[in-house]
Amino acid sequence: MIKVNEYFEGNVKSMALENEDGKATVGVMAAGEFEFGTSTVEYMTVVSGSMTVLLPGETEWKTYAPFQTFVVPAGQKFKLKLAQPAAYRCLYK
Image (tube, helix red, strand yellow):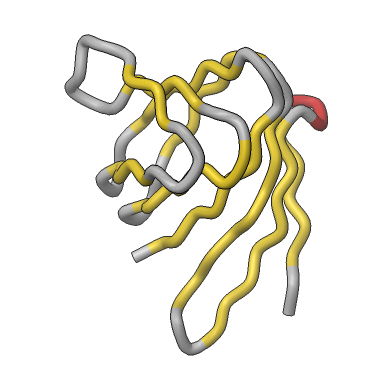
């Protein structure tokens, strides 16, 4: 079954599925600043555009381009800055 999610007044939208590979989402984000929390380990891969990310425990922001992945531990919060819209894939482990 596919589930549609919407966050931050429609500025972040994703579609979720679960299959034998586990849970995954694909989505888009408008330009802006966002903060998310995790319940499991998340593997975020930029598909289009770029994302500037502040990971838990870090003091410096890092920019990720298409096909680059960052990992967020379970039970943490992370921040994103987007200068333009971007697309992503997230795998939950």
